[in-house]
Length: 228
Image (tube, rainbow, N blue to C red; front, side):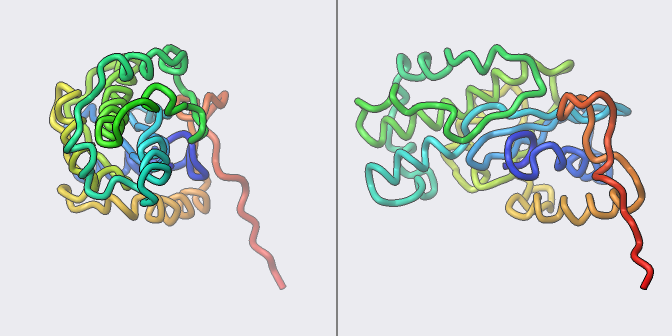
């Protein structure tokens, strides 16, 4: 997970910002990472990035499919595409208190339960959990200072057509995969750490109060040269 909840959590937003600015994209915009947990980076002109976890992305869907079918994910969103969203279960999932907490904030992949969809057929459960991921990202936008002009999606969820379609339906602005911009939806984090290494050597900040709640922008430590 990339923006605020995984091992690279608080660090990758500055790479997202560098990508968006180098591409000359119209700001503000949001980059969403859909790993096990969903997270976003909000990028505005001349401002430090804002980042936090939005809720589950693939975790609940993957766990459902593994339990019900023995397959570790909903391949190509096929089950979700066949199913229908259960409105009552979706409302129950969206009532979780995490969505009312202020940002920055982070999640563990096991922080949410699949109990609301336990009684549904597999395809309807998959459709409901897919809709849940999309709507949870929509709810996160209420915590942003401005409405973004576009949403760019990276991570494994970018390869799920049903999830991408659900995002397009849930969000009131254009949604595109990072691949459509010539970026790598799958390698975003690996590329980020190369960029972060250069920033660390230069003594530039990697995290910000708006991504971690730290009191000031912080570097990744101090680099020492060993003289032999």
